[in-house]
Image 1: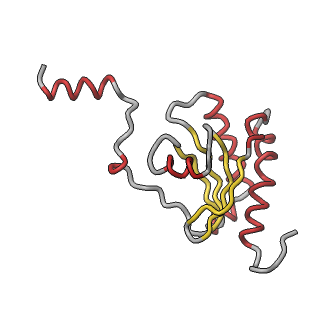
Image 2: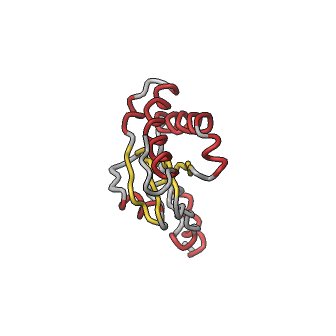
Image 3: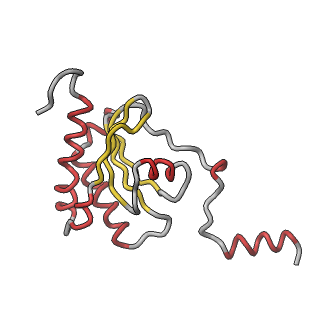
Length: 150
């Protein structure tokens, strides 16, 4: 079998192989601000896809101003791909998780997983689970230095 045929055959048999780290541009994580990241694996079940859609619906509805102003960064990230895997390791993730992160000078300085979204029965439950944590992180980030947040 020729090398070319072998290469084509291996690509057909291994369709889930991710490109090398050098081939993928690194995501631009914020220097300062708040992020809400839904970390997921390459292979995803219907529950995971529905959860991501529910999170997106809530974030777009409840935090439209914060998104538009750049105060909040919302993304779904595959934790199996570089450089997302490095961030997932820093955050000590154990699988698919929703995490709110506060960034300062390009470093994740505070973060909190929001596991309650997995038990939420519907879109409203997902929103009720994530909204308080995101709101608290935004308040802390946007409060003037030295002031106390309510």
